[in-house]
Image 1 (tube, rainbow, N blue to C red):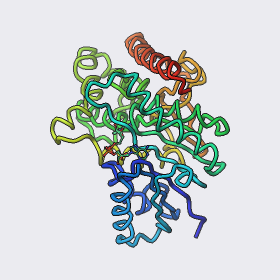
Image 2 (cartoon, rainbow, N blue to C red):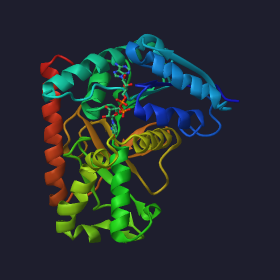
Image 3 (cartoon, rainbow, N blue to C red):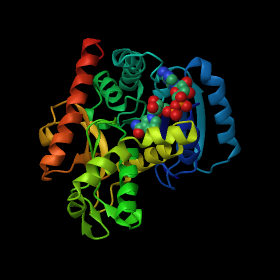
Image 4 (cartoon, rainbow, N blue to C red):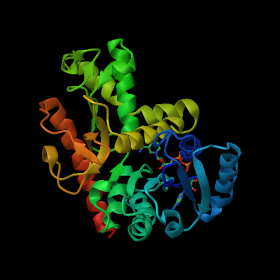
Length: 328
Ligand code: NAI
């Protein structure tokens, strides 16, 4: 048996945690031949709940799950972590302004970034899920100066998967027939799901994109507002689908994206497609198993450019706000 991989999950007592941890224990995160050691980080008030989750994990008797440890101390949680899944975050409270939200999350992701810097394994990779995911990832990465920036990513895979399903439905094909979807920008209402480069049942997506009324009036708002639609229907936010997207993101990051396809992830910009350096921005990306690479050389239609720029402008504003708060 290979050496166990240490996976740290924050917000382990939360709803996404409750889906994610069991799928991780079952070996779905890193493949069925990789044993896993889980470290669960929670705030002190939720440690008891996380301990209950750990008891249930024990009760599954997963062959690949070597150990589960629960803690409220980030240094302990990230000690030797190979994979860090930062799910726990501070939700927007009533009357909370954006600066308050960013500040409250800075108080979480700054110290977690520092703990990762000081305690995690040399090969750590960090996925930030907790919202606002792009800015939280920026804060964590900025507070971990010794960890290469390309080892941080922010999750837009749920948006990617939602866009694939919506496009498949519209085109009358199964979702497995959709390739090369791209989510650009921020994981927020300004995100831009781009069908121009997709291949849908062997047909170039650019043909579907000719219907700009459908794109602008239906497809883009449906994808961007899907989270709100789920809350309206379930009375609670996307949880199992978010956990599924985490599994997809990590699996592709470590095991590689399928040949001829790509996925979407928020990554540290190094200037691709005119995105300012150092923004944590979603791009179409591939992985060879060692890390993400932005897909280069795509032609960006004016329809897309306008929307990508709007989302980048929002990311720039968020970065200014976290800078003003001294968080990066
Ligand atoms: P939840 O409220 O059920 O659970 C969050 C958990 O995080 C709670 O148990 C809380 O105690 C914990 N937590 C808070 N501060 C913490 C800290 N400093 N250290 C460790 N744990 C801490 O929320 P849920 O449904 O599990 O969602 C988690 C986050 O994921 C939210 O921010 C949500 O907005 C975000 N999300 C992001 C998605 C994406 O696509 N990027 C998709 C869906 C959700």
